[in-house]
Image (cartoon, rainbow, N blue to C red):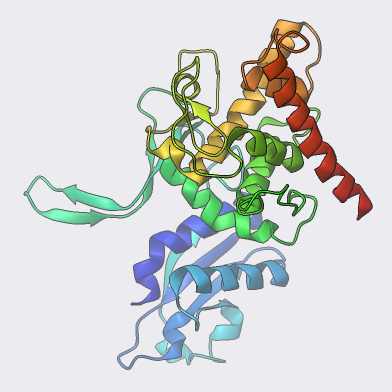
Length: 338
């Protein structure tokens, strides 16, 4: 399989990592009659200085995603005549950063007003079935931000691994006494960072807070749907049916950054945690409106869990929030020791 067969994957990554200001272009080399390692070279040209470390990191990421261990990103001037004779060179342009459209976050696959559609079979007017590459599609009913499960999954695959060695982004690696307590740390880190950067709260959400929340919602187990006053609650972070519907309602109480998930998609750890953290951010704004003061993340969790008005009055509500505080304090104590 040639690099061109992975074109949609490669373009998706490059669009996420480069913007207009980078002024960089990437090319494929024309396939040679006799297969060679040169076919795995992706030459690039840039109209400004480029970080060689960033290029190397992208190269390693693309090797992993395409399965081509020979893949190399090499400056065009270092390819012509040095690796490939100039008489045999024919470069095929496939990505130019000047064509990247405005996004709310560099990890997003699509510009504002569009959403990602994964690769799928498509029937032509002739009746022939063709393979349609993954692409951005204009939102039919809104120019606002709209996320679908496919894009959430692609964002996680493309970017979350890079957070593994960032202790500030990662929750404290303490299982809190649960068998799967550290299993979803990377998802917690990725979605906490993403939504903090998109929604820009004055007091950024801590990944430790999210970890403490999940510990009390599901004990880090993929539990069966649980009954609640707002319909079935699903997944690790327990997205209720009511929350799932509000997140995708363009005419409802959430004004932007909507997420559309099917019932099954709302159970998947990647999309469940991504949507849950988005909902938690909304609950902080909602709490501020109800309490008529600046809300804390603890306030947000109280509203998230439907415990508003019960703290200090209902034993079960106090017990639940005591657990949240206990887990959070344990994580914060470990973080402060470092």
